Image (cartoon, rainbow, N blue to C red; front, side):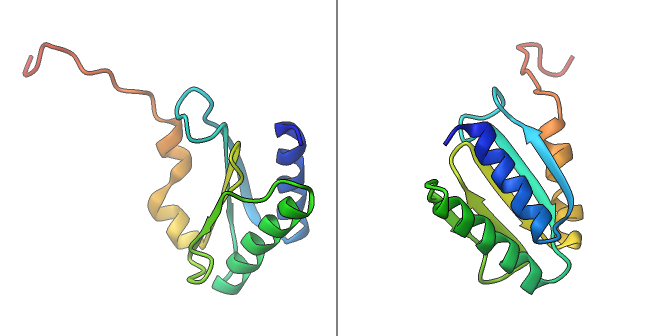
Amino acid sequence: MQLDELKSLVLATLDDMKARDVSVLDVHGKTSVTDYMVVASGTSDRHVKAIAETVAYRAKEAGEAPLGCEGVAEGEWALVDLNGIVVHVMLPKVRDFYNLERLWAAPTLVATAAHGR
C-alpha cells in the first residue's frame, strides 16, 4: 500500500470513529522515524482506545500491520505506529499538555560555537 493510500485509510477511519480535531503533520526531513504524524482527540478513555484499536485493525486488514501500539490499555494517549505514519490519539487535556503540533512545527535550533555571546 502506498503512503498516500495509508494516510487516506487512517483519515477515513478517524472520521468514521468520530475523532476530533484531526491534524496531519508532515515531519519528513525532521525525523527518520516517520513521514507523517496524525494527531487526533477522543472524548473519553474508551473513545481513545476504540479509535486506536480500529485504526490498527483497519490498517492490518488492508495489509499494513502496525509495527506497534502503545498506551491503548490506559486510554489517555494511544499511539499506533504504521511505519510511514504514526497516529497519536489523546484525551484533550493530554493533547493540550504535550502540544505535539507546536513541538513538531518548531524551527530547528542550530548550536553555535559562540556560547555566551
